[in-house]
Image 1 (cartoon, one colour):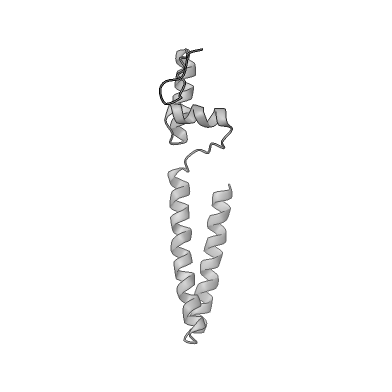
Image 2: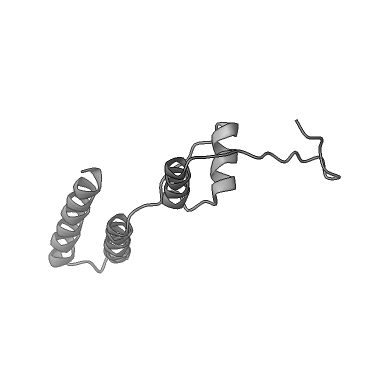
Length: 106
């Protein structure tokens, strides 16, 4: 084992097969991490999560936009200027949120 450098860090050299290296690179990339950061998190036992897919990002954006519309309706209700149509629109938007959440869960 090598000694620590002047900052107290230890350097490690490992050899991987080409298949192991590709696997490490793919797993680190899926999490948006460098290979070093990925390995450090594994060693430390830190939870590692894959980056969300573009589909999940798009669904989150849709839920966000719906939430903004629901908040606008809630403000109009609280201000006493809401109409029955606003309530129907709010229920429709909530239904859309439930549908999107179902898609995300799949």
